[in-house]
Each structure stands twice: as C-alpha cells, then as structure tokens.
Length: 125
Image 1 (cartoon, helix red, strand yellow):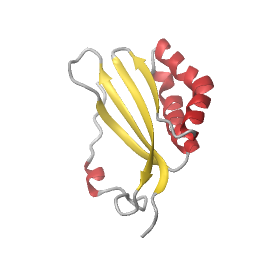
Image 2 (cartoon, one colour; image 1 turned 45 degrees about the horizontal axis):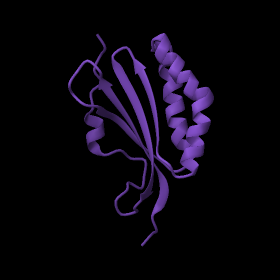
Image 3 (cartoon, helix red, strand yellow; image 1 turned 135 degrees about the vertical axis):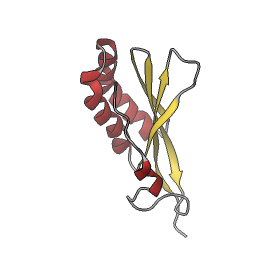
Image 4 (cartoon, helix red, strand yellow; image 1 turned 120 degrees about the vertical axis):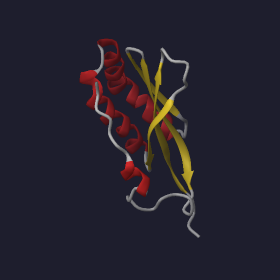
C-alpha cells in the first residue's frame, strides 16, 4: 500500500451578504505543493480583477503583491490560509488547508468524474 501524500486542499466559496443563506462551495482543487496552491488563487485573482469594483480590486492586488508571500510562508509551515475579497454584496473566499491524500481515497489521474460533464454554465444577466 502506498503512503499518504502531503498536499493542500483548496476551496473557493462565495457568499451573498444580502442573503440569509450561508456560503456556497464553488470550486475545489488538490495541490501538491505550496506554490501550486497559492498559484491557483493568484491566477483567479488576476483573471477576475478587471471585473471587480475598485475596493475589491485593491484587495486582490494587495494580496498578489504582499499577502501571497505570507500565504506561501504559512503553507510551508503547514498552516491553513484564507484569502477573501468582497465585491459589492458578494464575498469570495479561498481556503487552503494542508492535508494528507490517501491513495485509496483520492483520484489518481486528471480525469474528472462523469457528473462534472453534466455542469451547464449559466449565462449572466
């Protein structure tokens, strides 16, 4: 039997601050290194920053320029990290947790499960 593999479990949550509903999980990602984990957030923030309001864009770029180093250092110490950006009434939160991936419980290839292909993208209003 293979030994567990150290890595990071990454999640992206959104929350409508005007609603009584709690946060909704939007995406998850398994990373095998601290750079891979924080790169996931960095790529997303760079991609969405042009569409964010000025305050949220400032939050995003502050993390990209200053917070990313602190995040990486914390991950290398096996500490969980959270990055949050609030755009209008939506809070977007990325969470990275150090984990041990168990070989028998973790997918071993890049193939997505069949349900992933049933996802239908909703057009924006």
